[in-house]
Image 1: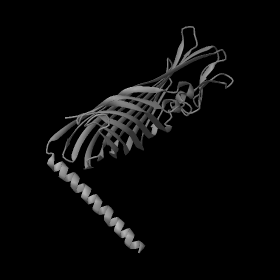
Image 2 (image 1 turned 90 degrees about the vertical axis):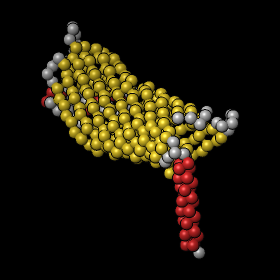
Image 3 (image 1 turned 120 degrees about the vertical axis):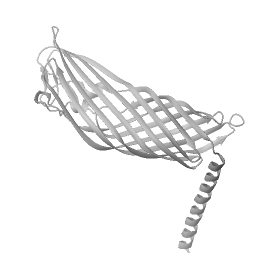
Image 4 (image 1 turned 90 degrees about the horizontal axis):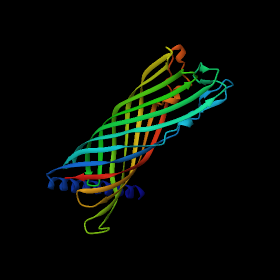
Length: 317
């Protein structure tokens, strides 16, 4: 008896799925026109804090600068998508750029200062320390979309992502002599991704005839090759080190979306998005395991997490 009930339920679900697909196809066939779509808005993402680790210590090993002293806050940026749809299929190109992550910290020491490499580099006397940390993220995607249902689309495509960081530690040991440590990391990710986007709930005629409030979201997951590089230079000395490698990595992105449909062609959207990137080089992480005095640069990878709001417009015509 239970087996019959299970079989009947499976048949009902399959029948329901086929009927909905048929309706969706019929609607798509009735609309033979091409629809251009634009989505543009301002994004602000927070980046997770740095690990708790010493970057600079004095002669006695007392910490002067910790990586958490230069934690990054929120960065504004542009998040824009342009695409088109014909019947049940479409294509889109998206750009996400955030390049204003910056943090600085300064301190002083009368008991020397040593940048905490494997073999620390510094001096025994008075130091004025100035630390600056910058991070930039640029992302380009090309996705194909399929709408099996009017409120649901499935996507597959490619993503190209760059995450570049620069940590600069200046030691003013005077008079007129500055020792500058520059630690740069570059991550270049290229790979394929898939995802889904849809409207979960829709409330029509909320404020006036023809408007609507939409609640939905999206998720994307992809696998990428990350070409990574660490570059360390200490001026005015000749000490330097660099290293590069390739590593497989996953990127996951999720969005919760509230949209207000003003007209059929204009939607105001407020989103909260999260972005997780696996196995990337972050500049502060490379200090402890590098040894630039002997030409050795670290390749320590970390996972990094971003989250923040997005506000913008979606326009179709």
